[in-house]
Length: 116
Image (cartoon, rainbow, N blue to C red; front, side, top):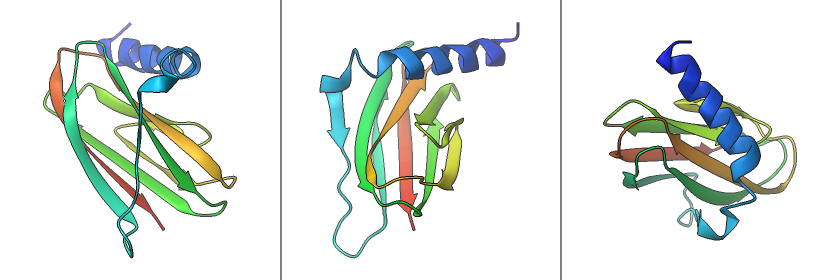
């Protein structure tokens, strides 16, 4: 298996099994009044993860973009997908969780989220 395949497999496993075990470490994303996007930066440990929660309505279009120093930080969003860029129409009105997963060494990252 290639390293990229291993990283994607690890992200999928973390997304499927990890949300319930680290739910208390979620950071809420609140958009500024009149804004539909936000950028967040941080540091993520070796093979670590970070959880972000936001609210949205059914039919809104979500775009999440992640940039990192090691190029091994990916985002996963339930009912939308996973990757360095995740986008799609949200199927229901609810809270959604973005899980950032790092398949490499500790690194800095910036995530941009947009809802239209």
